[in-house]
Image (cartoon, rainbow, N blue to C red; front, side, top):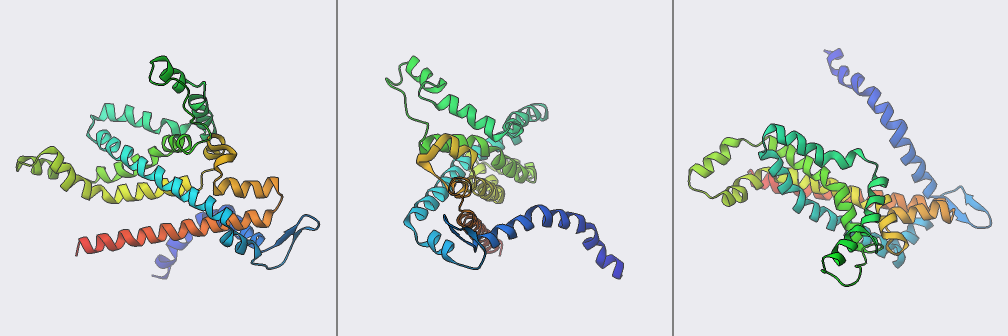
Length: 285
């Protein structure tokens, strides 16, 4: 009996060791570093100080950057939900042969480096890029639209990068959906729109919510896409931490910014999960 109780812990021990070595240890090191102080004359000084956190939490400059970051992440998550949910449903209704082909198309961007994808969008969205050239060529616009270094360009590129994650989350919920339930609704006289609204969507809502959460967290911590498409004019939290580490050499401040981003994201994720659990607990009571 004692052996059975310890077996799960022994089996999970290798994964726990890897997790501790490659994730927990760096996070602990960054957190410790964030309490150090820094001056241009003396560099990093070990000790314990909350000055870095006080500056991040009280300075309007950092407030704007955090609001921009989470606002961007929320917008990307909403657009990804509007695109990815119907896309997952269409994928679910396809024949197996077509489904495999289109699933490869949807997941194809994940097989390419995010840097390469972002540089591709930079080529498409530039003043002389393919999108502006095509719109001018068909007479839709007279002068190029500014996509680069704007929120619009960053949102477009991030949605392209992150929509597959939402599709996978919703598709996983759809695969657990009994087709007979839809057929029963249609046989009883409900329209296809009514079946989707009152039967399908409520049952796949956990997938929609979890997919939105995944997209939100990935967008909030994104670095490559905002830095290339948004540039210096649209700094997000990840870029700000990068600048503190490599440009200002103020590692404690960069670590504090990263720690605040992690803490804020965790609070949002836990609060979101709590809200979802309470909502569905009330629904099924």
